[in-house]
View 1 (cartoon, rainbow, N blue to C red):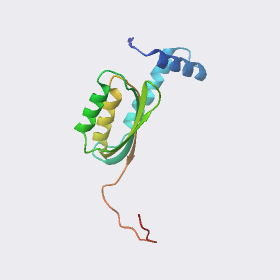
View 2 (cartoon, one colour):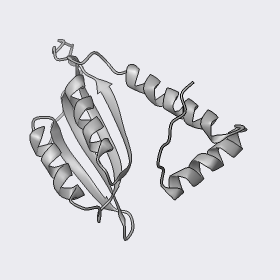
View 3 (spheres, rainbow, N blue to C red):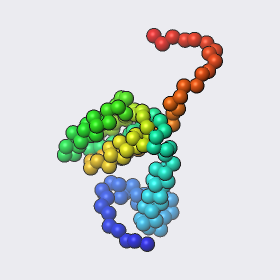
Length: 148
């Protein structure tokens, strides 16, 4: 086993400590190892990089973090073909949440999501990817309806 040193915000550490106590962990190392394993397992479950998907990228960030808004915009402009729409919500004086709908190859979507979540000042992030088929399958129509 390796010993490492990490830096964690006080609020996040308090959440980790509370979860460790609630779940009966003996120490911080055990819960952090389990959380890391769960995150890696979730990453491994993603579809093959070339398969198509739609996704929701949700992240909370410190809107006052130095140049963060500029870096986020640059990331999205660099992947403009993936982004469909973004919802921006002001949570409090310091925090904003954004939900971005994405569509494209799952590897490219995951790559963009990883870069957004890893930006300094992003406090929380998660991407939910839903596989889609690029082929349209014919289906029988039961009824028609209009979209006005």
